[in-house]
Image (cartoon, protein in one colour):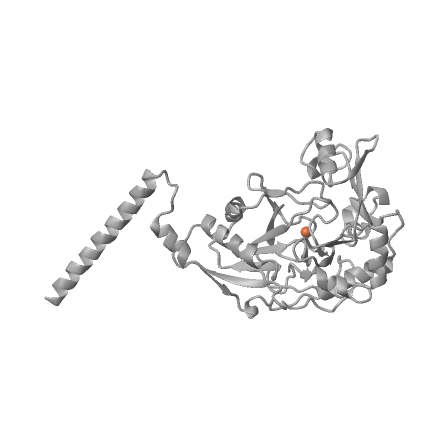
Length: 396
Ligand SMILES: [Fe+2]
């Protein structure tokens, strides 16, 4: 008797569920899909963010920095022995719980709401456990992000679009054994992103390098020699970039960098970034501008060291074998003081060493989404061996 009652009860519950489901679906269809089904709402409501334990972010092997080949500042004074472990919410790890399998678009919206609420206090937020694996998944995320995307134009680094429609890029395609000093993206122009997002398609192996070093701009500024800062604030920084015509040279030709063969389009893009331009008689392009060394964060008001005097210096490109024999004025980029005088090698060493001293490394995991406040946190790359693939998307 009890068993029969139980079976009847189950059938009744099942019918009620089916009725609710049909009603919900019909309601949604009748309204042209403009409202979410109750099941979708339930999926989103069940979503939760929990702190990611710090130990899950600590690499098993920290990369050696001092003496590291193909890394600016590694051979000189002040470079730390090893990259430091994550500290003080850098990055702030978030574990995503999605028990009712909300869609990736819905998850993205919720993650970006979390970013909006928290990025001022924790300017590097890493989401783990999203239902993502591939570059295509990152395209879905990029398309669902509610802020306007920003294109790479005029950047003196070799990278490619991962998905033209979604606006995602490979992070950097320079040789993998090259380390890239921490920097703020596009800080050498006046059209830099406010946020930059990295997605891990392929995590580097333990002990293989490939960390994305992070550091707070404000901490770096407090470590720098005040006299160095004062001089740059007085003189500013000049960035000079050289992009050959593709008929003259392949590497970083202006057609690739600006994604067009139209000179007028190049000129308008360069001017939009605040750059001055000169065409060489051979068809090669020179782009230059002066920029302040420091800015004030628009939300926090905190003064921040915001430039690329190290990354943009010719000393980086001198490490590239393909450019070893190239004259100074034909390197992709160089930096000097705003009055044209050269930056002293000791100053470049000091700034590079301070950057690496402030930087922390964390352990990437496939499917991680890292969101940075580009005006508060620098990112870079430790050279690596083996497979590693990080994609990037930027917003205005
Ligand atoms: Fe970058």
